[in-house]
Amino acid sequence: MPESESLHRSVQKALQAQPKREVIPLDHAGGRYWIKRARSTGSNLLHHAAWKLTRLPLLVPVLRQSPSEALRHESSKLRRLRSTGLPVPEVLECGDDYFVLEDAGPSMHHALHEGILPKNEESYGQIFDALGRLHRSGEYHGGSQLRNFTWENSTVHYIDFEENFAPSIPLDTLQFRDLFLLLFSLAKDRHPIEYAPMIARYREQSGNDWAEDRLREFARSLTPLERLAAFPPAWKLLDKDSKATYRLIQELKKL
Image (cartoon, rainbow, N blue to C red; front, top):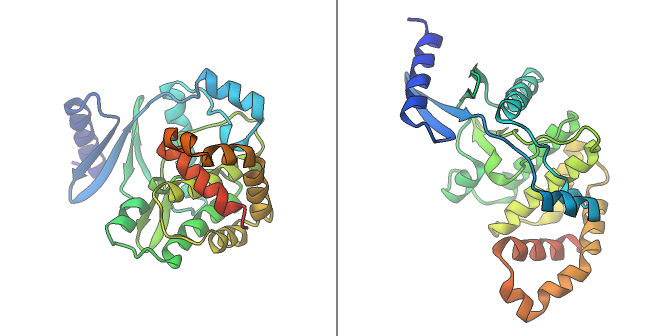
């Protein structure tokens, strides 16, 4: 039996055995694969209203896509990126409501927390280098949290490209959003990084000379909210994400 047919049969069995699971790990013929079911995307009405009111890059709404549209967007983007030599997992099979990916190693979140990689400047710097290279290629990620970068063969890979945005959104806005999301994901889990050298590595790899200035200006624009958050009664009401944003804003103002 050809290997592709054997893998297809294993995939169908896994889909039938776990009908409600959206992402399914699959061990087959000594290798690991991932089955990803199609799922819709889109921001809610409150998110859209906040974007129209503020035009903050972080609030750019995700384009509403049906499950089949989201599947086509992500699978085609992965194939396009791979064709250019960027490190993304190969799409091995694509059905009407799922696609199958090769494994691309543990997430960087896992690799750092489990000691696969040391929590030092070089480990974190490689993530910012990778995001910079993606941006230099004229692309954006859309979900650039630490969990969506992986470590395989001594290289940072990219995964999870299901989020899409309206064609009218400028590329630099989406790239700025990517950079902030990565910084935010590190601040949220209190990773021990120095922000300035990480952002400098990103700027060098991406060619986006606006990085430091735009981050600093964005942080300063949120000073009124930062002061409100620092008020003790308000601080007690903030969730983890809000507190991480507060800490990150303080650091970015120092750039």
